[in-house]
Length: 342
Image (cartoon, rainbow, N blue to C red):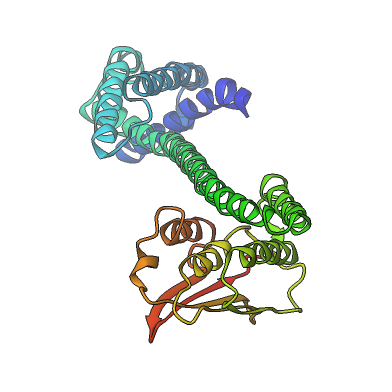
């Protein structure tokens, strides 16, 4: 393709311009080019084909100059400037090189010769410009879009890593506190807690692919709940239900944890926590309820709480999730629905 554009296209372009000029001229004057001298016609054809190299070379040089001058920026102002340069350059070259050659043929230069020789090549130049530059500008637009998408994706991945990392210190603090209080009371149970704790860390550190089977996420939540039960009052009334039909469905990890963690953190009053994770027709639905005497406390939780979760959901499940929280009659409700992506 490059060889065609470099070696074959210029003479074909020049020949197309010549044939068009010849047909228009003969139509206006009534001349018949086949009645002219064969050598004259041949000379004009050869000249036009060679002149095609000059014209296309000049166009390409101008295009390269435009690209160096304006780079990737393009708009209607740039197009108008390029067209102006193209028309002026075409007129100058045509009148300096082609017009003297025409003066030596037939009956010299007539007014219609001057008009036709300048107008028709300009029309061809505009067509060539439209095809050549539209491809160039389209490539630039696509490349720019790809680069912007890549930058945006890199930024989102960085933000997601930061948001996920925020859970770790908060979780470590709570878990270590649980083990600390348990050591004095029951060392054997403390050892079991440490084992569960290590499983949680292993999941957070090594099982953080883009997706995880939901049964692994459920196992993680069960271990987390078991550790949290150690730190809570004996008055706690805990109801946990994980839908047994949930198994290999793929989800992003650590999205259910914040709601369950905050339920344990803010449970007060009658000390009731209800957790239910169920499969729906399109995804999964989590409901967390906890009794509390000061619902406002939850809304004031820091960046590792609700705001963190909202942002992760926006990044991972855009238009594929629904998160609602509300307080009513001493109970705080949190509901999260997620539509599976695959």
